[in-house]
Length: 227
Image (cartoon, rainbow, N blue to C red; front, side, top):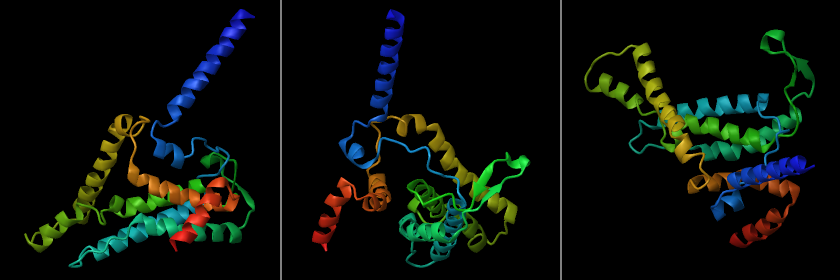
């Protein structure tokens, strides 16, 4: 009995430690970012891949096209974050709910074009796709200007493969540094990025309004007063 009680106390302490580790010491983060995670929500859906890839390609084209203007116009991911919400809900209404069986080569199992209502996880991943398409708010890819300078000012030709490798390596270098620094600037609970809290709030507003939670009850009158 004593060993069982000790094991229970140990498990409780471990659970408490995990809760403390997941809870951010920053008040703004605790009020904005939900601590729980609904693992039952579908993530890798047809809606997410189709809208995400399309938005990434569209923003890449638009930002590269507008970068040659005297006053460059940058289309950021906030545009896709707002526009993809009604598109996702529309696809959730019109796509067939029929389940298909995947081939054994792809792991088998069943999948569907429409696994259920459009959820926040799909919305977040679509916005991440779009964010990559706008170079995380900077417009076009950095190395494209190097290719332009080589051709326009130095009058030299550069092959498509060389230009593609230059652009891809510079872009992937940023992801590599992000992965190396993740342990120090992402995982610690005391490291927070104020700019992302606005986006998190925007992700949660439709969920709160649909659930009519206490947050929505407080938010709607505030929005009416501001208008």
